[in-house]
Length: 229
Image 1 (cartoon, rainbow, N blue to C red):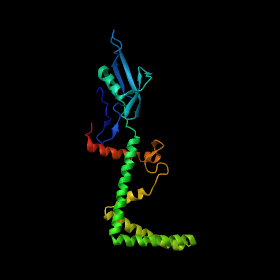
Image 2: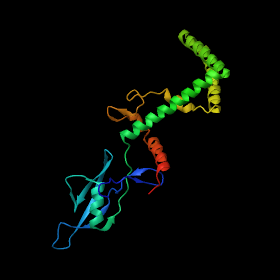
Image 3: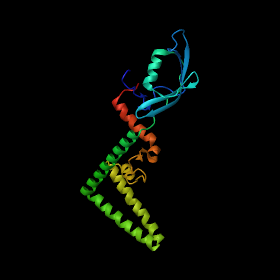
């Protein structure tokens, strides 16, 4: 393992985890004591992931080591001194990284643009789309005038017709393999990150709300590239 960074643990679902488990306790030989055989206990009390590297905060016989150690360093220690695993601990999933978030949002934007282009092409070539679009626009104008005039009865009468046209367009788009959800989502713009997923050098709130979706996206991508451990 010398010179090669340990890759994260990948489970059967493609999710990434720390290699060593939180709360794990290891009974090891004290290699610093050459005069007589002595044992020490290491315990992992915190796992961190920074700049693509796993870091572990560890206690030695109950005392916290001053610096976090990398996965490579911990692997080295256990490889040469481990006597027994006293507690297996619990495996922790890696957090999202800014790089993953940025890549996901970039791919999402590309897919949305593709759907928009498909719709533009369909509208241009399909007279039914053109007629539906005209009807929808006329109804929007009538509803706007009714609202301005305060004629809420007229507005209420027009609204079901408008929704009916919307439903017809959506059904037609699905038949034409146009992703309605992607188009709807493309209209929603995060006021902080502008749909990039990153705000002021940090993962944006909108990305954190979609954390499981983003992790699933990369899990599927990972499974296509590598075999689970």
